[in-house]
Image (tube, rainbow, N blue to C red; front, top):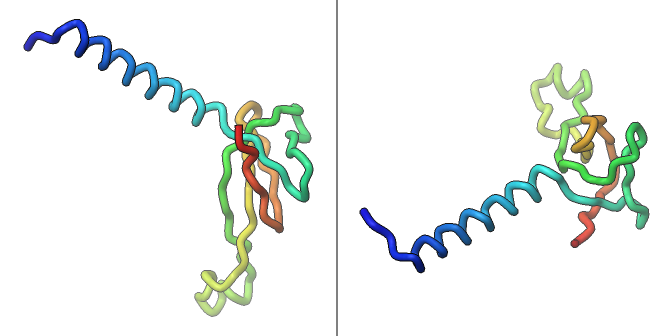
Length: 95
Protein backbone atom coordinates (compact mmCIF):
# COMPACT_ATOMS: atom_id res chain seq x y z
CA UNK A 1 0.00 0.00 0.00
CA UNK A 2 1.30 3.44 -0.95
CA UNK A 3 0.46 6.75 0.70
CA UNK A 4 0.44 10.19 -0.84
CA UNK A 5 2.46 13.00 0.68
CA UNK A 6 -0.71 14.56 2.11
CA UNK A 7 -1.76 11.28 3.73
CA UNK A 8 1.68 10.86 5.28
CA UNK A 9 1.58 14.41 6.65
CA UNK A 10 -1.87 13.75 8.14
CA UNK A 11 -0.67 10.50 9.77
CA UNK A 12 2.41 12.30 11.13
CA UNK A 13 0.26 15.09 12.60
CA UNK A 14 -2.07 12.56 14.25
CA UNK A 15 0.92 10.74 15.75
CA UNK A 16 2.40 13.96 17.10
CA UNK A 17 -0.93 14.93 18.69
CA UNK A 18 -1.24 11.47 20.28
CA UNK A 19 2.32 11.74 21.63
CA UNK A 20 1.57 15.16 23.16
CA UNK A 21 -1.54 13.76 24.85
CA UNK A 22 0.46 10.82 26.26
CA UNK A 23 3.12 13.23 27.57
CA UNK A 24 0.44 15.39 29.16
CA UNK A 25 -1.06 12.34 30.89
CA UNK A 26 2.39 11.16 31.98
CA UNK A 27 3.21 14.54 33.46
CA UNK A 28 -0.03 14.72 35.46
CA UNK A 29 -2.14 17.72 36.35
CA UNK A 30 -2.07 20.56 38.83
CA UNK A 31 -4.71 20.68 41.59
CA UNK A 32 -5.92 22.99 44.28
CA UNK A 33 -7.54 22.23 47.61
CA UNK A 34 -9.30 24.88 49.68
CA UNK A 35 -8.27 27.45 47.03
CA UNK A 36 -4.57 26.66 47.56
CA UNK A 37 -2.35 25.02 44.94
CA UNK A 38 -1.25 21.54 46.00
CA UNK A 39 2.54 21.09 46.14
CA UNK A 40 4.19 17.79 47.03
CA UNK A 41 5.33 17.98 50.63
CA UNK A 42 8.25 15.65 49.89
CA UNK A 43 9.83 16.94 46.66
CA UNK A 44 7.91 20.21 45.99
CA UNK A 45 6.67 18.99 42.56
CA UNK A 46 3.25 20.27 41.43
CA UNK A 47 1.94 17.56 39.06
CA UNK A 48 -0.24 14.73 40.36
CA UNK A 49 -2.34 11.75 39.35
CA UNK A 50 -5.89 11.84 40.75
CA UNK A 51 -7.42 8.83 42.49
CA UNK A 52 -9.87 7.70 45.15
CA UNK A 53 -9.48 5.24 48.02
CA UNK A 54 -12.07 3.65 50.30
CA UNK A 55 -11.74 4.39 53.99
CA UNK A 56 -12.63 0.94 55.35
CA UNK A 57 -13.69 0.42 58.95
CA UNK A 58 -13.67 -2.83 60.91
CA UNK A 59 -17.41 -2.74 61.56
CA UNK A 60 -18.39 -2.30 57.92
CA UNK A 61 -15.91 -4.98 56.88
CA UNK A 62 -17.27 -7.38 59.51
CA UNK A 63 -20.80 -7.00 58.12
CA UNK A 64 -19.51 -7.15 54.51
CA UNK A 65 -20.81 -3.69 53.64
CA UNK A 66 -17.56 -1.86 52.89
CA UNK A 67 -19.24 -0.07 50.02
CA UNK A 68 -21.00 2.13 52.60
CA UNK A 69 -17.67 3.51 53.83
CA UNK A 70 -16.55 6.96 52.80
CA UNK A 71 -13.85 7.65 50.25
CA UNK A 72 -10.80 9.89 50.28
CA UNK A 73 -9.23 11.63 47.32
CA UNK A 74 -5.61 10.76 46.65
CA UNK A 75 -3.10 12.72 44.64
CA UNK A 76 0.04 10.79 43.72
CA UNK A 77 3.07 12.95 42.95
CA UNK A 78 4.25 12.22 39.40
CA UNK A 79 7.88 12.89 40.35
CA UNK A 80 8.47 11.01 43.61
CA UNK A 81 5.28 8.95 44.11
CA UNK A 82 4.34 10.42 47.50
CA UNK A 83 0.60 9.96 48.11
CA UNK A 84 -1.37 12.92 49.45
CA UNK A 85 -4.77 12.16 51.04
CA UNK A 86 -7.70 14.59 51.11
CA UNK A 87 -10.99 14.28 52.97
CA UNK A 88 -12.57 17.09 50.95
CA UNK A 89 -12.79 17.63 47.21
CA UNK A 90 -9.85 18.91 45.18
CA UNK A 91 -10.19 20.63 41.82
CA UNK A 92 -7.96 20.41 38.79
CA UNK A 93 -6.34 23.65 37.69
CA UNK A 94 -7.04 24.16 34.01
CA UNK A 95 -4.01 24.91 31.88
